[in-house]
Amino acid sequence: MTTPQIKSTAFTTIDLDKPGKRVGFVMIPHSPDDDAWGVTRLPIGVIAHGDGPTVILEGGNHGDEYEGPITIGELIRDLDPADVSGRLILMPANNVHAVIAGKRTSSVDGLNLNRTFPGSTTGTITQQIAAYLAQEIFPRGDAFLDLHSGGSSLDILPSAIIEPSEDPALLEKNIAAAKAFGAPWTVVIPNLGDPRTATACACQAGLVTIGTEMSGGGSVSREALALCRTGVRNVLVHLGVLPAKYATPVAGDDRVLDLPGGDSYVYATMDGIFESFHPLGTNVKKGEPAGRIHCTWDATREPETLYYGADGVLYGRRQPGRVRPGNCCLTVAQPYRGPAL
Image (cartoon, rainbow, N blue to C red):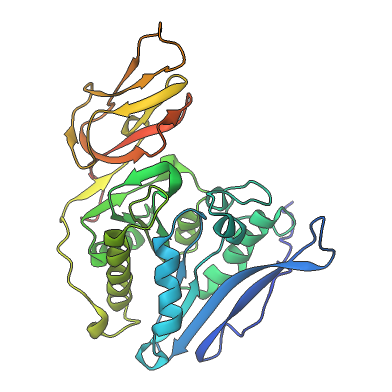
């Protein structure tokens, strides 16, 4: 027997379904040690006018990724509702406790919002945030843009991300929307098949779904922020929510790359300091030395060399030098060989 789904107890300070521009909060009851009847507040803006699709924009899924939240905040403040055909639901800081702390995971329950979907209305606060998005926000949408960067632990080539789908028609739409972004790189990231991400959940709900990876290193990249600003507007023009005057042609590489499986990742094998051998964007070969790990606190121990598991382009590199076994040190993006190109 299926357990009945318990409805989220969250409420909003604004009406999500009326026309116009409104800015407020999603309020999720939260009773920590120092607050008997408090709430966790997720900032939200809605801009609705005329007929057209509903597009949901998420930032702050991880709290140490900054270009997306900045871009969404600017849209909330700057967009004229008269220019919108349809509705934008703008959420710049969904993992709000992580955003305030500048951390990847929530400072309240330690969870990664992007590994908790579809969430639980009776779980911890991060699980409740995921459940609210899955139950109340995604059903209102036609498309979903999830804006990420590499965060504090990863430096990555600025790119638009295609969410895989077993529905050929939806995958084709996802690819078209990602290409419309105009990033220098377009990459399929299946997250090794993990279904708990926001994009996987949105895609499962039938939404046209894309993401981004905008540089990283725990800082704001001027170049990546400029790309995020233009790319988001390009996608909204592509989806028919904004007029053509908002589009900015960006000369991207027409190739689509993929992180298809475990061979795309180079993992640390020992405790130490990682030295990468190549800059991002380098064409690398399977079996080629990728870097080495130094045990600087034991001068008698030789460094351990890591090797690439696939041919392709060096796409991502761990930002902190300190590693432990299992840390992802490097990622290699390979030519995409799936359908719909």
